[in-house]
Image (cartoon, rainbow, N blue to C red; front, side, top):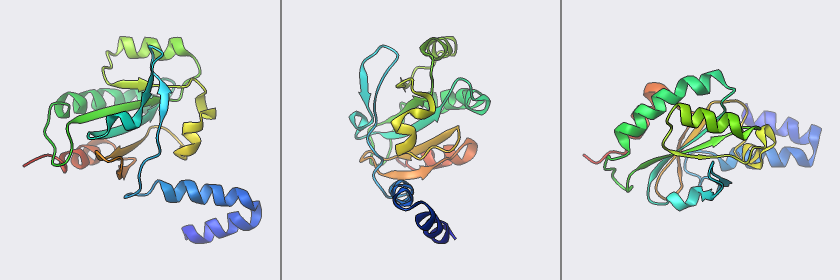
Length: 172
């Protein structure tokens, strides 16, 4: 079915269809996650690839997104639980939060108020962020779990499914 939809898109939209196909194909399990280099709240640029060697959850979210806000307490619990854990091929666990925001004060206040301690980045371009396009973000919350080599292990898992996917990588 997906191939049929892509074929129709290619016929209707010409070259634009090939861009969509490239985005969808490049974000499948087993592919390398595209690099992200965005500023943190402090203004320093933090690269996703700088976390090489760690199991990383890339969490796309926004302070304006109710389900994203609700999920933050679960992410805090997972971060606390798995940050010090030992994994089979990884040297720890990290969350790389990518906020699709337009206003820095909203983002800063939320991070401070909720004591979020994992990496948070944003270019403050909201849905116009090139990262949203690269990762083909259609809605929030959205996440991608990658291994220490940056290879996609899973996408868009939440709750117990996310916890199982992280736990599957623990050392026995």
